[in-house]
Image (tube, rainbow, N blue to C red; front, top):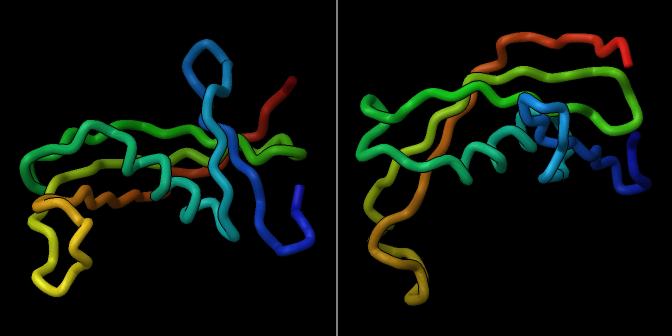
Length: 102
C-alpha cells in the first residue's frame, strides 16, 4: 500500500511466515538494502555470506525475493567525527517476485 509521500512498506518474511521487521522505501530494492545492512557483515564483499531475503509488500500479495550480502569497510576520511572506524556496506540482487496464495 502506497503512503501519501509515495513510500511503500515491506515486511521481512521469515521461514515460518512471521514478519518481525518492516522496512519502508520508494522501491523494493531500497527496502531490501536497508534489510541487508542488518545482516552479519563479512570482512570483504568477496568473502561476505549471501543470504536470501523475502520482503512482502504490505497491502498486496507480492513477495519480492533478493539475494543479499553485507561487508565491512573503512569509514571515509572525510566522514563526520561520530562515524566509527568501520562502516557496513550492503548489496542486493533481485531473484524474482512470487505471488502469495494466502
